[in-house]
Image (cartoon, rainbow, N blue to C red; front, side, top):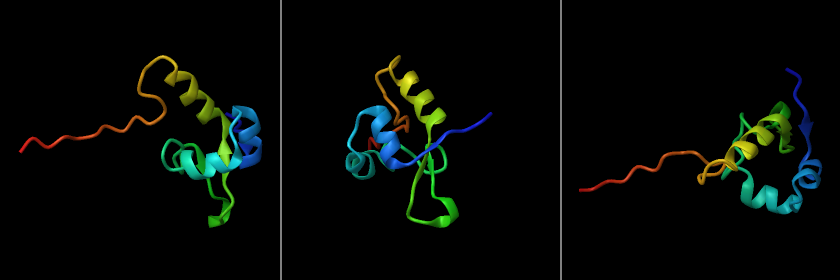
Length: 77
């Protein structure tokens, strides 16, 4: 499967978000390193994996959870 790698600016154009909002609000909250983006050669620059983002984005329209699917544990004690 071929992957499409996008810079922050290219991703911003595709999803109609500001590049700064992607970096400040979405990265590590909804976009996870290793799944949705990589840091080539351990550098600061991020490359986003479009197919994974699109897949999660489309699947989130069918549930109320959204892209962040981590389970929160509650302690009753």
